Length: 53
Image 1 (cartoon, rainbow, N blue to C red):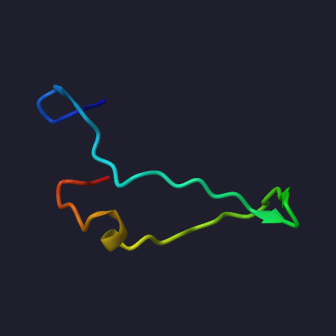
Image 2 (image 1 turned 60 degrees about the vertical axis):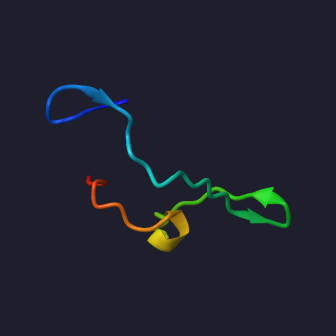
C-alpha cells in the first residue's frame, strides 16, 4: 500500500518485478558491478501516465 496526495492508503501501481540471476555452467555468479536493464512498456501493457516516481 502507498499513501496518495490526500493521505489515503491506495494500492501501488507497478509494472511488475524482475529477478535476474547470472550463471555460468549452472553455477550462480556473484556480480561486482551495477546492472541496468530497459524493459519496453509494450511488454507490461503499455505506458501508464498515472505511474510516477
